[in-house]
Image 1 (cartoon, rainbow, N blue to C red):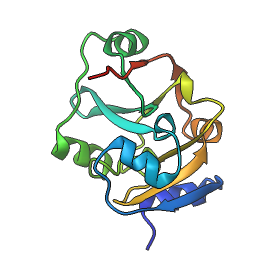
Image 2: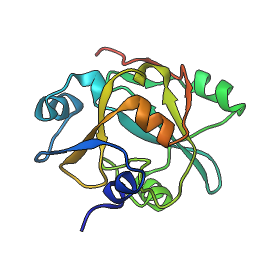
Image 3: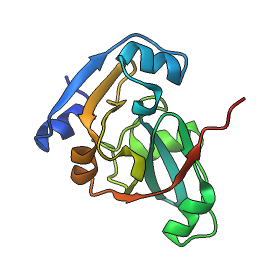
Length: 156
């Protein structure tokens, strides 16, 4: 039985390619097993605006949310990230598998503007499974707001 994400993609008639791989321990490892560059491993971040009010933020693998930019875009003063149980309750997906496609609630989506014009991979709702999809098609299907909401990943 396909994951809710695959069911949602099929229902939307979005072309995608499934990428099946084993467990990964890092974003760089995910990129390697998916055969893509780190930026093309898109992270789906669940952000909490308030009680039972969340949104998805899509960021390239080598970038992080800029909280000041995101707060300004949304016109709010406070945002947070739910813990693992809160993310599961809000989306129906465990961390590491979260995708806006087929989530238990269709929360709004904000996509960083750098996603446009590329093929990306993102979670498919199950561990060890990703989808490769045209970012512009995904953004359109999700009716995502596209904006500059990230900063480069800090180097360690």
